[in-house]
Figure 1 (cartoon, rainbow, N blue to C red):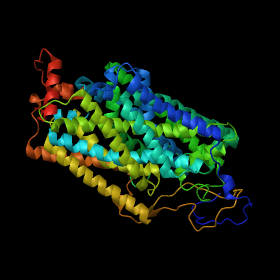
Figure 2 (tube, rainbow, N blue to C red):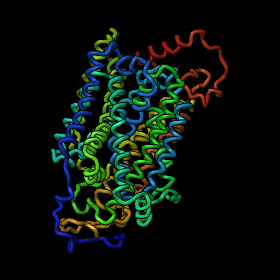
Figure 3 (cartoon, rainbow, N blue to C red):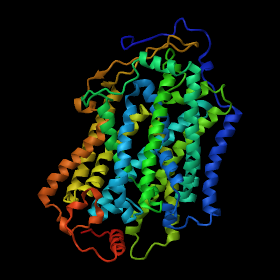
Figure 4 (cartoon, helix red, strand yellow):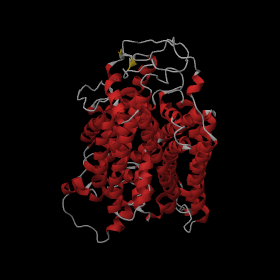
Length: 597
């Protein structure tokens, strides 16, 4: 076993079998299983576009599924959207490399789901919005709405290629097909059924795909455990290498992963993704009652927790299997993010068709996340940009539906092109969290503070949001630059190549990294705190700008725009006899670009 002091290794005295013997590829059965699931997703889109009784030719149908969908498919869709290819492959790779501390993310995500269900979802559900950013028009003004809408679209375009890249990398690993060819084919399927079938196609495809994900993850853990000799062996090897780490209570924010950085950082990150997320909002509003919407979010927390447990354990299983022959160092795989599909292929002799099921599951995770983002963005662009600029003549439902389908095709095609950039980035979990963290603080602050602090005004949160983007972006760019230049490097858990049964090229590359902390201290702050940094920046700036420009008069504000947590702050007043009429008036004003007061 190598430690951090054993920096370089060689391949001398290794058995003479070729490295090619360590890499296996798809069989005919695997291709059949994989293609069957992909074609099923496409068929679902065709069904809802051409054969379902209710066609996807209205905004309500295309974005909200007619608002009468069942709890089960919506819950499965929420879970499937959460389990992106980034998570499915990235979390086990994280555990393999750095240990189990990341697993306490469960605590943060359960708290976020419960808080969102009872504190924030009731606001959106009462207003019945097609776009979450319409709320910003009602609460603040048009400038805040446009600011966050543009940010959402920009970051979705930047983040979606990560989702495409991961399964393409996995499939390229097991098939030998060029990564970019795979990426184009993946996106073509997703764009096809998303543009045709709307939210119903996305939700039901997610439901089918979620079973492939679950089956694949369970199969990896079970077969991997049997292969290494049982749970006891897995835990013994993980303990020996110091990979079992849960309660590292070091309060130092410069440590990459501690109990505090993972729980606090992910609490703020996932609060921004769930409490004020267009994709989550669409699915919850597709349910007929607020009770079912809450149940969906609580069920999401259970699904997330189950997935994280399996992912953490599968990372330990992978380490137990390769504890004495790291496939990244030996060049059996190109990047650590490929280690899970590599393990699947290594176990492929046990169950025929198993690699096909697993890789189909990885693709399913990516397709569900990508389709969710494309469907959500089409609604945001229509409601926040096209309708307000359309003029006085109303946009017909048929025209709106066609526009959204064209948007899905255009944005999806752009994301394919951007996969070229993703291949040059580092560890996928850190890259994805860093990218999301740049805008998450601003988004979280504007939405959540808007629902809980009625005195904050539009100028305050706008300037706070701009400041948040600059500060978080500066920290993120600085940390990524430091990682690329080598002035910042994290210590990994011990790895070894002592037991390899195949030859691999001699190299001077590092097997076990010693920490390097030469970068400016701000750039060494844990990447999980990016959202916290952005949120804090917005809060401080918004507070002082609001004080300077005059806080809102709470007596003139509509209580429906605020969380049940702060309803008691409002003075009792006579509500209009027709509450729905007041909400309809809010919608009309929002579409016209008028400030809500």
